[in-house]
Image 1 (cartoon, each protein chain N blue to C red):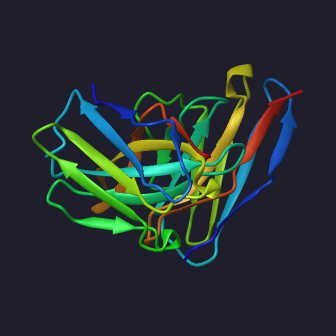
Image 2: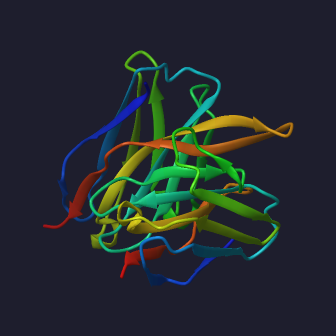
Length: 126
Length: 107
């Protein structure tokens, strides 16, 4: 059974870089049937997609983050990571990693988030 | 960006009630829509993908419908454990976007 677990510092200073890692267990991060993603949720608010990566290196980012985000994958460790630079208090949120699986329905590919990690709270404060 | 608008933002219903939540996309997204359930302090859980396909292990009391711009999540018989916030999400185009959520509470 696939499981995802986020790890990283819970406190980051303003203007510094937030770094998080998601460890995938129970399956291979090198599966062509998955994209791997990061989503965040500010306290008491809704969900915001940040970025996706395929093991092949194909990436997609939310333009709202203005190029501050970098997602990467380490197939040797079965992990993928997020770096978000120049953070401010507005980046305080619970950060989730998630798997995005492909399913064929009526001959059409559907890539959807099927499994999420438990999330990790990152607070930006001096 | 495709904007996803959910309504209502919150609702109260009784045990056994049939509950429906609406999600509207700012442009057509075919059936590239997923629904998630999130309980307080927990990660979102996948309920439905492709607008109406039930995720494995999800009870059949949950159902989804719609195509194009208008979608609905229905809970056929509300139970106390269904108290949660529900989110829709489109995956027709990047950036992936979520609705603002609907909080379902039991009377």
